[in-house]
Image (cartoon, rainbow, N blue to C red; front, side):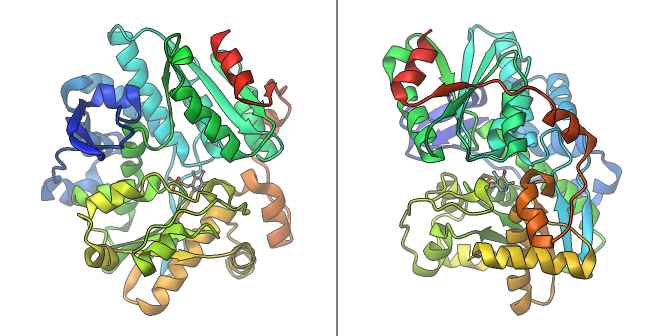
Length: 431
Ligand SMILES: *Cc1c(COP(=O)(O)O)cnc(C)c1O
């Protein structure tokens, strides 16, 4: 499969180089040249397919012949070896739980698939050693650390803002050891991000180390996120209503993967981007004017993004046709107060505990259904409530049961290196 840069259609790449580079050399995001529809027989037969078979059919054209079928099946097997249930909230709304993976958030899927793909290319070829350099506001770090742990030929360096991630998130990225190094930055997530971007452009570093990033701009992290929309459809096929998905969105990688699943034929009628106070896209949908804003901190911190990097892919998918986009895609924003209220309400009415990200998704769905009653709605519950324990317990005014895996994680020893500025990072990478 060929990919082209959204900055310049002439700049193309195969799958392997798109995965190794992350961004195109002209800094554009990669986008597939062809998007083939799956045959109707695939959807007619989906009840008879298992998770690996469904995922394989969805992704194989995007990988092409660059990974052998048997290796691709192995990578998929390891990527989706947990459950993706839809839990009924009421007769019109279900919660698609994406947090049953090892780090309790949906990013496990993309991180594992990318680790598998990159590991395959390293084993096969002469890429040499690769350093995955990534900044995290919380969930990316843990998922990437876990996905890449022990993968031959890859070192992982994670920057995270000191004191600004939850305790569980910190443990998930600082306790693994082996090829994973956590750098604790005195600063904000934006500072971490700026340092990472600078390192990618610093030839002193790139002459010494081959760097790649592992955020959702990478096609190997972005595209496998199609899988769970297909797993969800398998559970929803029996509904005789139009389907709508509400996706709590930050960098818009997840929802953009859902739109790709629609593009390959999944019969989803509408998508809702549910946002917290970071409302760049909500404003864009109203004004058609794209104005980035500095990010503001919220209780759904994985969505505190002021300039969502994947939105250009969404515009491309909709051929920059605003009317067409509006027909199939809505965006809403909710503040922390509303988010907490919805957590409390849903808990007291149904006993279901939402995390703050899922709660934003729920709110978006509820708003859409008010004016579109003929739909069945699914919101993506992107993280386990225990990852945001304090916020959740305060909102529902009750205790949350802690899974065993988290109990043992909390007893592990944190290991990190403290850094204060770019020179510290550079010094570490050159050491
Ligand atoms: C990363 C993350 C999001 C946002 O996903 P995007 O693909 O960046 O839009 C939402 N919820 C949780 C829990 C996350 O970790």
